[in-house]
Image (cartoon, rainbow, N blue to C red; front, side):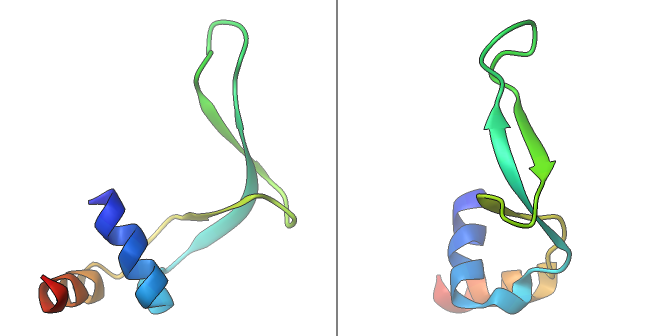
Length: 65
């Protein structure tokens, strides 16, 4: 549930557990064209969620639906 999760995180940041800040690039040449690659960088352009509190997310989702 990617879209509902993004909205839930915007409403309650505590849903996110571990995360990494980095810079995401999309490969535009070669055999891996279209692949997204995360380069770890403190000044990156994304904050990648690696873990969520599923119970908290489902509770918030259930309250809103």
